[in-house]
Length: 207
Image (cartoon, rainbow, N blue to C red; front, side):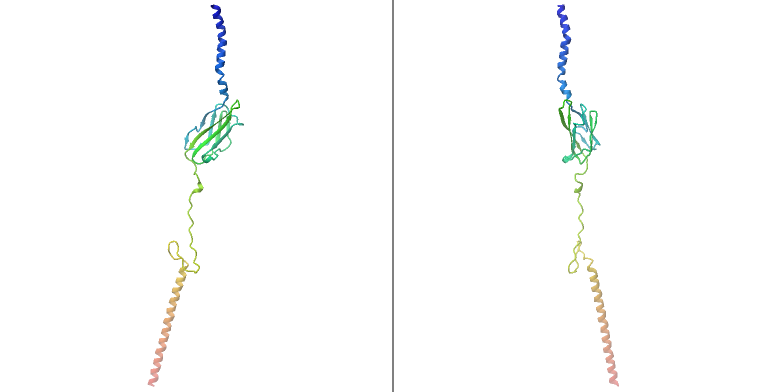
């Protein structure tokens, strides 16, 4: 009885070690796969003020040579403002915001076992630049009425006569006034001649 207990006691550490090793076997491949642990802005966030940069945090240190990251905004416009910087397991990306809308950060990193891991972080920018700055309406230029070929006054958009017709009207008035003056002077001279003729006749008759 005592010998059997002693043999079991001697084999127990070996059995425990094997069981512990078997329990750790599934964890070894999983630890070799890299994965995203967090981001700023976080996935699904809505932000009113555009951040100066975007940060991605990974389970293991990503390799700059094999890591690929893209940032796109509304209408698939690129919003990456420069080259990413790597610090430990963190990657920081300069952000160049455009108009308000959905922004997608796509990443692809390689794990230590060579298996690539890819994913996305999506966040919404609620404020941004106008969608189309050149779409603002411009005031139409004022149209100038064409001059009449005959020189006659043309109507302006407000219904008033054109300025070119004013000197012609003044000239006509001045010519009419001079005509009446010459006609009056002529009539006076003729009347004086008739009166003088009558006076000379009367004197001749008396003499």
